[in-house]
Image (cartoon, rainbow, N blue to C red; front, side, top):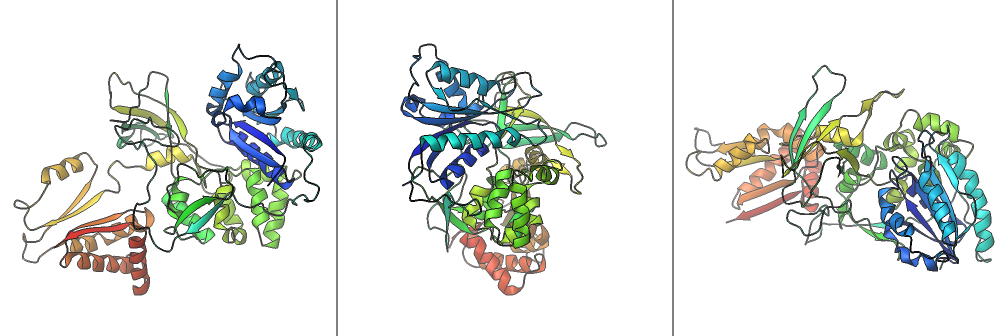
Length: 548
């Protein structure tokens, strides 16, 4: 057991304060100290009276506002009826993260520091004022402050004498282990944890509402320098309500091309299924990840591979590197002395995590999958001002989105993850129906419904009327005709293939058509095509329902 223990509580809007807090947790573990790291609003604040040592890491947002994940704590800690001796047993320190170009620079950290003193707490150090505007970023203030902090903490909580400090170059155990499954489970299937229409539980960051996109319209001219989109969602049954001035949080995904490139660089099978298990009893699995989960889902919807990596990314990557030259450079980037060079390599040109991994291929190829969630942060939702009124459109939500794209010294343009993802979405994309029957006017079931969906751009219908011409035409023939599209949907876009119909010969004929497509359009040899089809079945991306 790690002992003694202290607590780190953070309020983070963009992830920087959380990153610094997790750095504190890692440094505590290296010093053989127990350390709990939690968001302020996930911590039962009434328990503060029992905490002997707490480090607060707080960002300041907007015009001196606390981050969203500490607003409940903020209201509680400033209650006027709290006694001035409430925290008299607590030693504390406050680390602030802000931007000195704003009038209320680090307002939250300064105000919290004063309030904790008013409630009887004893400050270990003056408040730390990290500044985004500094040429080296917040670390210019954070690094020396942390050195002083550890001197004070180790004086209060000396580590066990029989355990040596873990050296910086040795990786700490990962938070989670990935247990790979040899075959898909017989029950259940991979899916995102979402709020469903009519649900009593309101949508949240951990359980978002899957809103169908109704339209995605460019509202600037084709030659205009800025691509601006008016995007409309159907929020029927969501329980979402909003008023003028409200914002909506949207959870984006990585592009299929980036997902494929990431898996190639790290040598991962995107269709490999796994379950996630925490190593420590007080650590819970991310609620946004299904169990079991595929590697494709993890990379597409959770790992922020398009973000600019922080210093902590290079620290862990250096620990995991087995390549001498690459490890040497990573250690330099993660050192205090190397921050100027790191800024020029990474921050100034806005180089992404994926691009860094491509620059260090030997290290990337050797990353143990267990460390993926330690190494790469989670994709965070983005806030957009709502551009519609519930009075005019009660079941619709509109946003006006400027697609972020700009050039740095890197060859590839920099693109905003969420705005680019939204702009790429087509309300009718991905839904293709290959419908087979004998006659258009005799047994074309649900013809009107299919045509209505096609009119609304929610479906592309590909019919096969087998008896309306001399040569019979079945769905497998239509699949072969559109082989390049079928391959693109399955291999590049991660589509699911559902097959329903007569069990006599149709399933075998369709499977044969798919095998042909995999070879002719995908360039696979016959054994690889068979393995590809088997993998689609194993990961439940090819499912059948047939009857005699």
